[in-house]
Every structure is written in C-alpha cells, then in structure tokens.
Amino acid sequence: MKKDNNLLPTLIFATANPGKAKEVGELLAGLMQVRSLKDIGFTEDIPEDHPTLEANAIQKARHIYDRYSEDCFAEDTGMEVMALNGAPGVYSARYAGPQRNDLENMDLVLKNLTDKEDRSAQFRTVVALILKGKVHTFEGIVKGKIATIKTGEKGFGYDPIFVPDGYSISFAEMEAGEKNKISHRGRAIEKLITFLKQQTTER
Image 1 (cartoon, rainbow, N blue to C red):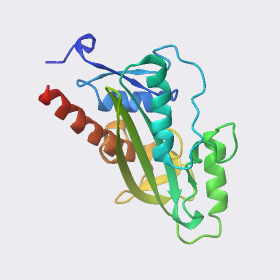
Image 2: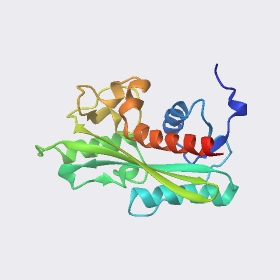
Image 3: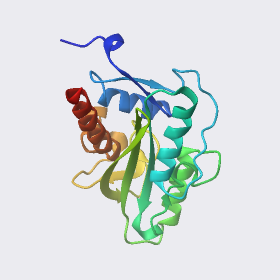
Image 4: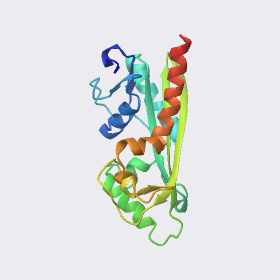
C-alpha cells in the first residue's frame, strides 16, 4: 500500500536545483516527505564558501535549520577529475564562472582534458543532515571516466560527459532508476535512508 505523503515526516532539502530535488525525492519516497527550498518559499542564495564539500553541505543545512528550526539536509557534490588534480571539485557548479552554466562547465572540462590520456574521474557527494539539532554526514562516490563528447538528454550537471565504471553510456543516457542505483548521490542518500530508518525504529 502506498503511504499518504501527508502522513509522512517532512524534511527540508536545502537545494534550489529542481533536478536534485526530484532525484532525491524519488529516493526518499515512502519514507519522508521532502520539501525543497522552492516548496517553502525560500529564494535567497545560501552561502557555500568553504573549501570542502563536507563543510559546504553542513553550512547550507545549518543556514536553513537556523532560519526555520526544522529538520533538514543539504548536499554538496563535486566532479573530481584525476588529470586535473581533482578539479573542478568543490567548484564544480561554477567551474566556468559564477553564471553556473552546465554546458560551459562541461565544455571547459573537455577543453582542459584535450591533451590528457588519463580521463578517470569520480563524482563525490556529501549529505549533511541536521536532525533535532545534531549534524550527521553521509558520503557517496561513483568512479568512472570523462567521455570525449556530451551524450544524452537526461540528468543534469556533468551527467552528459560522465561514464560510470562498468557502463558504456553516460549518466545522461540512463533512466532515473538505473542511475539512482549506482550514483554518488544515490549512495549517499542510501546511507541517509538507513540512518533515518534506524531513528524511526528506535523511537
């Protein structure tokens, strides 16, 4: 039987990215009712000026928790390319500039890899949950390589140029369910789900 979302506990997801909100909402379906920043009417920019994914995720979650005093979580994700010394990393969303343009970000990565033989890379996500005022973090990693061209129309961000290990297609060519099973964000959220379930059974 499908649970009525109105009866589920709610969590605020501190993101303005509709792609992330949809992806994570699907992963948490039936366990929590996820509300995005758009859902709660929050339109301000959240600061994320730390040098690590972990610190940025905590900063974003803390910003919303301090404002609304409600359980919430945030995540920060980076594409880490080995031949680029881990770049774009924490600057993934604004690699090509403050305009945060996905196409320009991908084009710059491809340009910077033009003369590189090693195209290995990984996506890394850190989720920061603030539950009853206490911070918990969860990490997910998926390894793969950077393709030479963009392929696929699904997903968002760097998905069209990232091919996960064991696959011959990009994240942007995968159906959502297939991607969520192996993605960095999916793996981090799975750890979050396991933790939330433990909290539920301990009540």
